[in-house]
Amino acid sequence: MLRLACAAIIVAFSFGPASAAEFEKNIMTGGPQGTYIQIGRDIAALGKSCGLTLHVQQSAGSLENFVGVRNRKNTQFGIVQSDVLEYLKTFEANDPEVQQAVRGVRIMFPLYNEEIHVLARADIKDMKDLDGKKVAVGVKDSGTFLTSSLILDILQVKTGERVPLNPDAALPKLLAGEIDAFFYVAGAPAALFKNNPIDGAKFHLLPITEAPLLATYTASRIDAGTYAFQKEPVDLIAVKAVMMTYDYDIKRNAYQRESCKAVSEFSSLILNNLDKLQATGHPKWKDVDLTALPPGWQVGVCVKAGMALDYKPACKTPEAATQQPDGNEEYLDLLKQRLKKQ
Image (cartoon, rainbow, N blue to C red; front, side):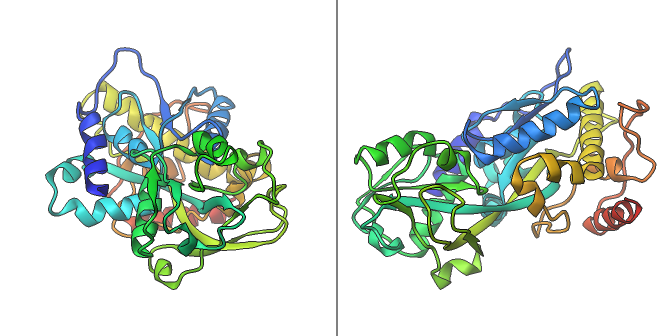
């Protein structure tokens, strides 16, 4: 089922990287109340302070974002869950469609851990209690869909029905008694749970502590009071959010040169203003670890160009990005140099 969902979204975006007469920059994020869109807006605001316009695009989530970076017109950036990356890497060798989807997609920066929220009726005490229940698992081109499906399959939970709803649509269904629980992968605090009234006597976040999940996911905790309905801490699991881009070739055409320049500029801006993002942006910026690279994926050459000590973004001195050799070791060396300089 997961491979079919992945193939469907790949086919939907199968028209290849496009050139455009009027250049623009876009980042694919997530739903209107999710953490991704807030992170995207923080990056766009940082670009605006430098005179750079970045359009923040809503999306269904990680799978759409990943393929969008490869194929969507004028889209240089996307935020993706690391288990989506692991899933694609697993099937890359034997699946031509997945091979096409991942070709040229590169890491920009690892970001923060995203907590896996499962909001359920109060009488549902743990993941096994989801047996026979009606559970919303996310729409089929989202990271939440892939993560929820993997977790339920690993734990061999036989739900009564897996409902393809995004979290924004699932919350009112749960409150109205039309479903029993729903999954939501988002960095805490998630606006969906902070901005909507939820009765803590009727609903709660499920603990997710089952040992088989720790081979793929990271143990985490949401502290008491993170959400108004949540009076006690909740132990659960998390997955890494990663900012992705494309490996543009500056020798190919003007579109590729401009896109590479945009990637370099925003790489430089994020790296040099991480402290500002941590002070004024979404709380998850405080958890960003730029050294936590997902295994098996390369950092883009345009990213490393922007990390160079002598790189100057367009807001200071317009300058064409230059290529650097491949290799994540060089990325980490550049990162260490920049962090020492700050």
